[in-house]
Amino acid sequence: MTVMEQRGAYRPTPPPAWQPRTDPAPLLPDAEPHRVLGTKAADRADTELLRTLYARLVRGRRYNAQATALTRQGRLAVYPSSTGQEACEVAAALVLEERDWLFPSYRDTLAVVSRGVDPVEALTLLRGDWHTGYDPYEHRVAPLSTPLATQLPHAVGLAHAARLKGDDVVALAMVGDGGTSEGDFHEALNFAAVWRAPVVFLVQNNGFAISVPLDKQTAAPSLAHKAVGYGMPGRLVDGNDAAAVHEVLSDAVRHARAGGGPTLVEAVTYRVDAHTNADDATRYRGDAEVETWRRHDPVELLERELTERGLLDEDGVRAAREDAEAMAADLRARMNEDPELSPLDLFDHVYAEPTAQLREQRDQLRAELEAESESGARDAGAPEGGRR
Image 1 (cartoon, one colour):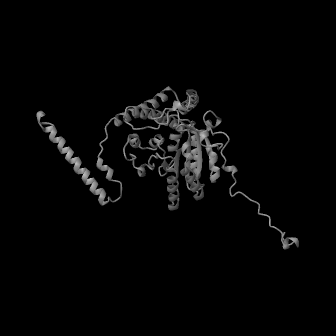
Image 2 (cartoon, rainbow, N blue to C red; image 1 turned 45 degrees about the horizontal axis):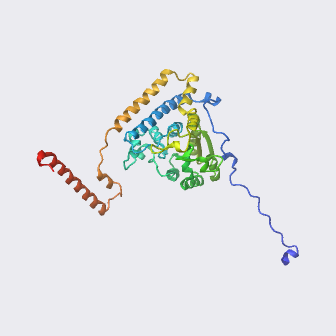
Image 3 (tube, helix red, strand yellow; image 1 turned 180 degrees about the vertical axis):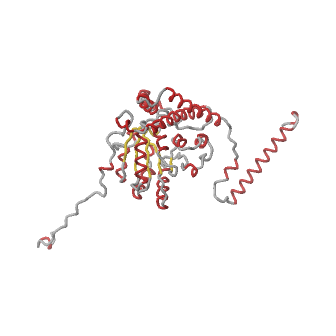
């Protein structure tokens, strides 16, 4: 004990009472996923919106089936199907204004198509071409992101830059449950919350990161709970309830546009098909599990709701299916056309201004191609006996 303490002059100052910077309670997600279909909330739903969602879901289901068939025919190199997740895909596209931006992952071609991108252009990258197939600036749709979660920081950067410029723009970034295990996910959420960027993060929790189930990825109560650690609200929604997903995402977009900052939405859904056409899903999940989720199919849920309320009859169902078949037939016909490819395209977008070395390589390749073409033409015109 010091002399000052012995004399009674030492009085340690108690630390100030600690207070959290943000009350976590309003940020916490509900205990159960938000639902609309089959509840009293459905009575208040916009009937025209429900019909629109239904038509888009039917079209989306057929799109997934046709794209999957194209992989078997060798017309696509790979296709990550979103069958069973159509409610998330369609709703994500419908809640955005024309000026907003969509940042998709590789599984979100249906959301890209629902945003207005031509179906063939949306599949160009998966066809094996070197580019994304569509103009991101024209459609306000970022390129499909194959690396997990790398599109999320890009969405934050664009949204933050738009706000600094005074543009009324919201970015909606889509990612799977596997992507939440990536560092890009955490960095994006942290930056978005600190900057209060107008971003909505939509996590489609479809149960598996390829073959890894969710409980092997995280011990969190839900993925929506992760939002609280970054200081943003987390929302939990039934990802197969198209009306509920649309409602929750619409609220999050309005919140972001009004300056309220980002929201993390977890949509609980299921990947009915395999991870891609190269995956054997039977190695890590059973048929009984898949069948359980088939009974909670997003198309059937909405069709049942509309039918029971007298908002959809057999003619309406037939019209939606015929429209979907027409889309599939057009996609099939155009994908069966062999694309015209030029090896010289490889040099066009490496640098804004090609380097001397690139120009030299391009000229060398052009000369080789021309020589090969001339040789083929001579052989084609030579007598049968004179050919080598």
